[in-house]
Length: 228
Image 1: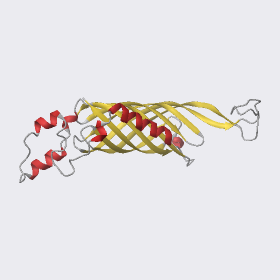
Image 2 (image 1 turned 135 degrees about the vertical axis):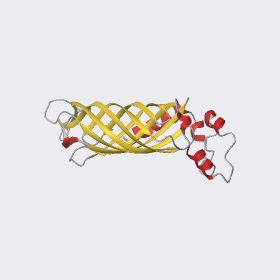
Image 3 (image 1 turned 90 degrees about the vertical axis):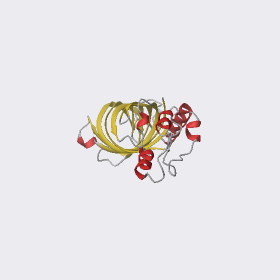
Image 4 (image 1 turned 90 degrees about the horizontal axis):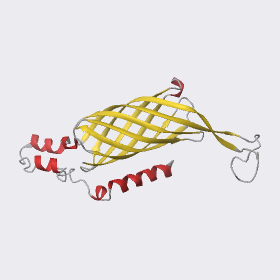
């Protein structure tokens, strides 16, 4: 799963272009942090006076220019399904867009795995957020996919691992174990590293179709690259 996460991160960088990460944020020391965006630059072409503290704060916080922007994202996280205590790592890649400066939607492909199971599927969701550079958000999402589990296969007369031996001790096979769906509320926070690059952390509570023993708390992080 670590390799899968690295691959998805590389794809996001390639899709977004090298320039997205080449720009370091200057808004940590300057209130007009997003002057590379044409909408923001036009609005704050004349910055607030040095003595205008409220104006400086507004410039530093304002991220309303992201309305109607869209982008690609890569995400990785960790959860533990049910009471088994076996952590499950996951990676996700997809597309996202801002309908307004405070409302986003997204859809992505998800892969999750631990020592016993593999889940593959898609997820979609919506989020309401503050239209600010540091933007707390709440959201609602849906995951749908299927699961494979690893089980012993040392007595089925088949060379399951293609090593030239049949039914050796400890031989295993991957087995389709059924469909899975989950709905989840989430909370988190975005931070606009630059006008194009958004960093996020979040927590989700997945309520699954397998029953409450299979529900999960999920923690993750995201990198998004945006354009217009």
